Structure formats: structure tokens, C-alpha cells
Image 1 (tube, helix red, strand yellow):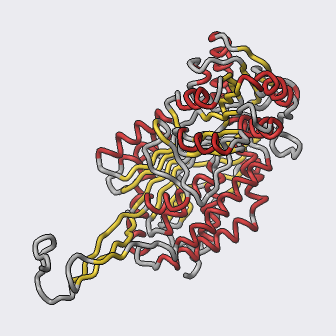
Image 2 (image 1 turned 30 degrees about the horizontal axis):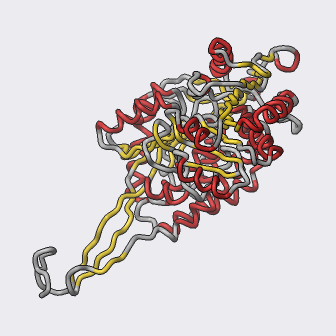
Image 3 (image 1 turned 180 degrees about the vertical axis):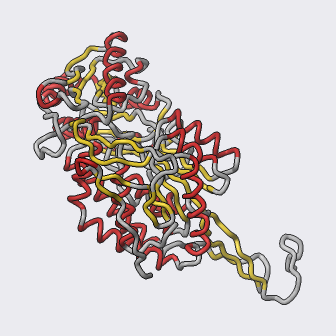
Length: 511
């Protein structure tokens, strides 16, 4: 398919700050409101990374209409041809990996080694979904009647709306956009207002790879003015949201009114269980990475560590000592372990849970303070924080914090640990450290979560397996792997009767 030429996505404002436009019907256009907002570096808020359009309902309507018209053409492009564009985009993303990763660290804050992983996840997703363009299999099955053939095929849904979060600003948009377009759908995406640049970089690679106009459209802005109209739009046939449980409830109810397909990937309060026979060195490494990677700003973050009493004190002492040594700072510094919170509001939430934990009687073993002196004064930095001797009913052990706050809870054994692990409203990720294969398989059976790791922390999902959770974590759909193909397609059963006579199923049974 020939590459379509489009204009540059950005122009320069005063001070050489780039101003990005919406991407609608293959053109980079200003919003109907005429308003913009700033994308600032959370490690140094003096830096304006870029300026984006503060869009409204009219922009959503224009984007949906462009996607609706493009769908009539795109759905007829053979799936392997659609997938070739995605494969070429993967090659381009690989070439631009360092540039896009540095952009991501500047706008999101997480350390550069993690943003390289985020970009790599988009690359991996693109390669995987490109392969699915030749694997959109459906069943063929014998008919119950003679001279009759039966099969089922996948069909695209139409226009799909995506609302994506700020913590994985390229990986998560790739989870949504790439399977959707390989399946033959067209898309309108609203990236998180804190991190829109990474979504633009992803889509730019697709456009440069030859994606036709209107197949993907970007509208930037805020939830009420963009996300709401997108969810309500009658021409949008599917909504995929990754966000908070509160927003998920609103989106789910709105989508249900017009029978939209709706995928909700929401919160988590993920447990890591450490038994007496665990490799403690490995468990401590995993708990630090799971708890403080991405500054704890992952839905899969290891926010609860449940430790058997025989090794509890040793684990706590060693874990806290290591947490105190983590280096905090600007993520572009290759030696930094923990970056900033995404914004002031999130930092205030993190700090408020320190007060909650203290009030509940948990023991603050380290951290708990904002860092605002010297190099930290212009960013949203907080010390890695560990509460110990936490009771499972405390709010800090029940509620998603989404920051660098870890609670450590004692347990009597595996059964007690699993009861504690399952005793929250979420069920996204879980983990067990043990050398006992019998206990490992029991935990794999009994932990009520969408993901379970053995001898690894609660983070580290791979793109070719389903990603999602149970209970308040979502509504049952999965991203990644074949789960994404399932969401972005509908089944059509097809019957071909070549008997040249009327045959009535369940009635005209051969004797």
C-alpha cells in the first residue's frame, strides 16, 4: 500500500516549544476550541516538553466521522496487507527507540531504562499483531445435515474509541490500536493529558509506514470534554479504557446504553507472597523492582508483600535497607532508580496515604516524605516508602495508591497468605516466591487474579499472553495476545448448503 504524505504534526511556539495538533482524517489540525495545554516534565516542571490541543466535542465528532468513512475502505483491505503496515511501523519504532524513549522520560518521568522497555513493548506488540494478520483463524465444523458446510469468520466492529493512561504512554496505546487496525477497525484515541507525546510518536510511525488517512485519529484534551463525548458517540462501536475504577464504572454504564463493546482495564492491589523456603535474595530484588519500578505507578505494582513469619523479620530488615539506598531523581540520569510522581495531584495522594497508614497504626519503616530541596525542588519527588506490621484490613493494604508505597504483612503459611491476597476488591496480578513445586501449583490454582507469577514480582507481563484481571480490576475482557483479537472482532457463522434442496436443521434429520 502506498504511503500517504501528511504534514508535520508540530510547529514551533515561542522558545522553540513544539505545538502539536490533533490528527484527524490524515491531517494535523488545530482544535475547534482554539485552546491548548502544556505537557510539562514532572522531574523539572520548568521544562515544557510540548503543547497540545485542548479539544472539545466538535473535534471528537470530526474524528469519529473521519474514522467512520475510512472504515468502509479499510475493512476491505486484506488482513495480511493491513498487518504489513504494522510490521513496517515496528521496524521504524525500533530505529527510533532511543529518541522516543527519551521523549517519554521527559513527559512521564520514569527512568530511561524503563521507557526503553515501554517503547520495546510497543515494538513487540507490533511484531506480534503483524503476525496475527495471517492468523485470524475461525473454526470449520461438520454440519449435522448432508451436503452442507459450516464455518465461523471474524468481522471488524467499526469505529473504536480508546482512552489511555499516562503510566505506559506508548505500550498501552499499542495494545489497543494495533490489534484494532489489524482486525480491520478504525480508531479515535484520546491519550492521557499528562503524556500525549508518546502516543503521537507511535501513530507517527504508523503514518510513515503507510497507514491510510482516517484509520487512526488522535484527539487530545481532558476526560469530560473528549473522553465523555467519545464514549457517548453513537457511531463508536467499541470503547477500550485503561484507567481508574471510578472512571471505568462511568464509561461502562455509558457504553451499555448504546450496547457498545466495552473493555475496562482498571485498578490493582497486587500481592507478592514470600514463604519460608523462598530464595530471599531473589524475593527482595523482585519486591524492590515490583514495588518501586515506575515509582509504583503501575496497575500491576507490588503494593503488598505478604511474608511468612519464619523469614518475616529478616526479609523486612533487608528489604527496608535496600529501599533506603534507591537513588531518586531525573529519569534521564542512567544511574537513577526511581523517578518522580506524574503530577502534583498524584504526589499529594501518595503522601496522604502515608498519613492514613500512620493513623491506622502501621509502622513506617522508611520514607514517607516529599523531596523538594536542591535538584528536587522543581519536581514531584517522594522517598520510597515502606510500612511494616500492616494488618490486611488497613486501607493501605486494601486501596490502590499508585505510588512508591509498599505494605509488608506477616502471614502464618500459604493458606493464610492466599486468604490475605484474595481479600481485596481487585484481582489483577499476584506472585509467589517458593522452592516447593506443590505450593506453587496450589497458588496458581487458588490466587484469584488474572496473572500469577512464580518466583518473580507482580510486574513483567509479555505481549503474547492475555492481560487483565478479575473483580473490580475490569469487566472480563483481556488485552494482549489472542484476547485483543477477540475483543476487536465479532463472530459471524456461515452455512453453505449445496444440496439444492431445503434442509431444516434439527427437523430434517437423516434416518
